[in-house]
Image (tube, rainbow, N blue to C red):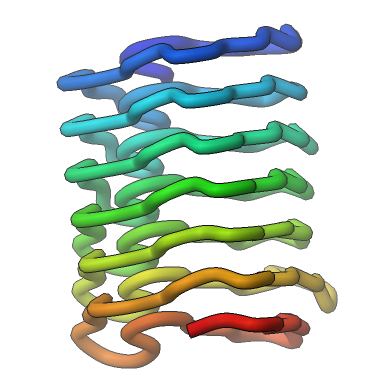
Length: 178
C-alpha cells in the first residue's frame, strides 16, 4: 500500500511535495492512517485499485491545504478514497481529471466519515457508475459532510450524480457552492 508513501501511525507534515506516476493496491500516491498535514502537495498520474491519488483509513484525520489531485485513476476514488471513520479537512484543494472505473471520480467516501470541504474545485472528473466528482456514502449509520464555497463543475458519471452522489443516510450541507 502507498506507492509513493505509506504513512502508518505517523503524523508527518509535508509541504510542496509531488507524488507522480506511482502504483499500489491502495493509495497510488499515498496510503494514510494518521493525522498527516499536507500543504501545496501535488498528486498526479498515480494508479491504484482504491484511491489513485491517496487512500485514508483507520480514523485518520488528515488536513490538506492547497493540494492538487490530477489525472489519477482507480476502480474507486480516482483522486482519493476515504473510509473507516476518517475525517479529512480540505481547504483550497483541486480535484481535476481523475477517473474511477466504478464510483467516485474525484473523491470516494464510505464508512462513517465526516468530510469538511472548503474552497474546493472539483472539475472534469469521471466515474463509470456514480459520483463523477464526489461519492459520499455512510456505510452503516448517518454521516455528515459539509461543503463550503466550492465549485463542482464538468464532472461526469455513467449512472447517477455527475457532480455529487450521496447515499445511505448521508447528510450533506452545501453552502455557497457552484
